Image (tube, rainbow, N blue to C red; front, side, top):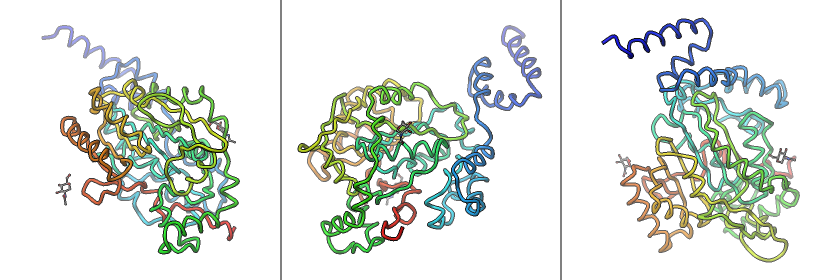
Length: 405
Ligand SMILES: *[C@@H]1O[C@H](CO)[C@@H](O)[C@H](O)[C@H]1NC(C)=O
Ligand SMILES: *[C@@H]1O[C@H](CO)[C@@H](O)[C@H](O)[C@H]1NC(C)=O
């Protein structure tokens, strides 16, 4: 009875007593429950970030926000809401919405409750960062409050330039990039923003697109393109981030933009530069010939996700990838990897087609076996998701009319 088990328990107790008094013991206790070896724990505790309050203060100081807005912002940043219901309080005023500090970290209790589980959100087709925080809305009960590793893929180089800065802001590494054109991910989304610019949303799609394009002619033509995001080495480095899991007790989620498209195999996507500009406010496929060509790298998504994540991880995947979903999701099913996904939210292209009916059927069958929750974009059924997260609805996230600047 008092054999090896007792000795081990006794030694562990002694060791715990020695460590008490140093603030590490708090982390020690919770991480030991999660089954981590003590030697690892001490190292990890030393890597833990500053308390939330320190981070908020630093952000406010470094983002260069006018002092009179700080008071308003502090209300939302200093006390991290403990539940999503308080996060969904009154919408901030327009002025605050455009200069705000990153939202507060998820509740500590949420992160602690799931310590040991790796939470991953993959946004395949990130667009104007409209869904970068969708995991908070669509994750299973309780999982929305955990801290996530977020991997966002975006093929359009103009949009990727923006999302890269946006991700840096969410990581508290820079200021929020101003949104200079309507951040619409689809024609339907553009319709919701159009009236704001005096473009009558009831006047027909063609008319609305032309109207908004005219209002934003200058900012559209001046949109920056960060060419350092083209480097293959940068893409490889960003993909390799997935080999470094976020510490389960990290105070905030980690956002990584991969400036590439997703595919069932690696390759190069030929994109016309003119077309890549055309789809900026309407969403859609930038592929096309003619004029100056951009060569967009395509990542073998199936290989990447299989290599880096396991069934023990909690993985949320949103996929709106202009028909790459067929090859990717079919392969995941065939390779018995569909079970990696806990939640799948996807849009099938072309909508209402025979191919989509077939894919949706295969997915429903696979999901039954794996317990994956499947959501489809605005399908008017019980199982739908909006192509916008809580922070990106048209009342909160829009570009200021350039004529009024
Ligand atoms: C371009 O992207 C790189 C990599 O994220 C970043 O370090 C750099 O600051 C960006 N350049 C500009 C002008 O935003
Ligand atoms: C929607 O789904 C939930 C659970 O997935 C179920 O309990 C509910 O009855 C469904 N509602 C409708 C209208 O189908």
